[in-house]
Length: 128
Image (cartoon, rainbow, N blue to C red):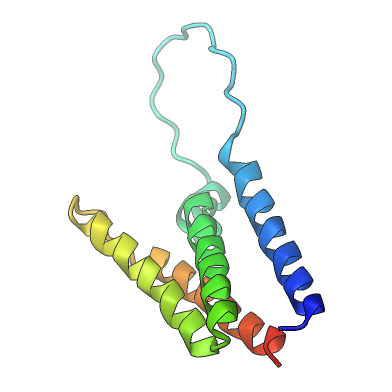
């Protein structure tokens, strides 16, 4: 693999790692003074979409991990199919692990598939 592709791969992977770790450690809020108990408020529509949609932080982590792992596999093997297959294998393994406690999530697999597609496309581009 030419040196420019290796440098590009390292820059891409390090930016993905820095981007996902920046969201992992969010500052904690200061404890609030005890308030009178109130009825729980139902979140508005936009908050529910953010909490349940594909942009939820857990799903973004699934997508970025799949992209990173798939890209590493694909560039090492110089095979785009290996990139997508390896990324989806990690995603399926994680969801089967979660299924043991009843938390199998199909949308997490969709996020993994998005990352795997990105790994496939990036491997095709970088191995030309």
